[in-house]
Length: 434
Image (cartoon, rainbow, N blue to C red; front, side, top):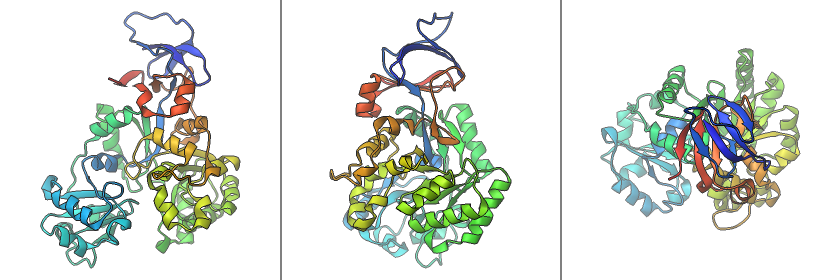
C-alpha cells in the first residue's frame, strides 16, 4: 500500500510505500497499479505501538468478566449486589476481576458463600497474583476441603482443573488495534509451548491481529513470603545458559533487592528485564544501571490507583513509586506498558500518566518523575525484545504503523487514543476510525 501526505514525528511530510516491511519513504511517490492508497492528510504516522507487558488470555476473558473493584465497586454492599446480579457464564461460573481489600476486606470462601452459595465464583485480586473461590468453585476444582479458598494464580495444580473455554481474542484484537497497537508482549509467566502455539495460530488466522512476543519461559513472579536468593540465582543461570533473557516481576523493595543480588551473582544478559519496578529506592537506581537492565513499568497505575497509594503508602516512600524520570536520568532503558487487564489497557492514557502523574482526585504523585510527551510516546515504540530502543519509520522497518489524525504537535499535546485514524499491520489496514 501507499500512504500519502504522512507527517513523521520530526515534522517531515512524506509518502510511505509498504508491504510486510516499509519499502520507500520519500516525497511524491508514484502509485503503482492496484496499489492500495491511504491519504494521511498531514496526520502523524508512527511505528505501531507495542504494549510491552500484557496478559492476552486474561485480558480477553476480562472483557466479559464482572468488575468488583474500585472505581466500579467500592463497598461490601456493592460487591454483594454486583455478584448476585452477575449472569453466569459457561458451566455456571461467575468470573470477577479487580478486587481490592478496600472494598470489603480480605475475601475468603466463607465471605463469597454468604453472597452467593449456589454458583461457582472465582474472584481475582487486582494484583493478578491471587484468586478467591467460593465452596462451589472449590468443589469444581477438586479442593472442597481447602480452608479459605485463597489460591495463588501461579499454582497450576488448581487452575489446570478449571474448565477451559476459548476467550474472545477477536474482541480484544479490535480494542487494541483501535488504539494503534500493532504488537504486544505476553507477560504471563506460566505459558507452555501449547499456549504459545495456540496464540500464534490465532494471530495467523487473523483472530488476533497484533503481533505476539512472549516472556515465558523466562518470566518469574516473586512473592515476599517466598523469596529465595539461591533458587532465583540458579534459575537465572539456567535461563542464561540457554541464551534466554529473564524478566522478573518486582513490585516491592524486597523483590527488587533480591533480584538485583541474584543478577549480580548469576551475571546479566543484555536483554534482561525488570517488570513493573513499582518501588525503586534511590540506592537501587545505580544497581539497575550497572546491570544494564531494561525496566518495563506502568505509570498508568498513578492515574488509576494513585489516591490509594497516597492514602496507604507511607509519605516517605511516595518518591519511590512508579518512577520514570529518575530511571532515564540514571541512563536506564525504559519501556512502558499497561499491564492489561490489571491496568485499563489504553497506552495513550499511560503516556498521559507518565507526563502528568495526576491521580483520579487530581492530586500529583511525585512530580519529579514526570517525563516529556515525546519520551512517553517513544517508550511505546520500542522493539519487542528491546523495549527501551524505539523503532522508526524507514525502509526495511516492519510494515506496522499507527496513523493519527493530527500533526505531531497536537498529538504530543493531547496523547489521546481518539486521534487514531488507522492501524496498519504488515502493510494491511486492520483498523480505520469510523
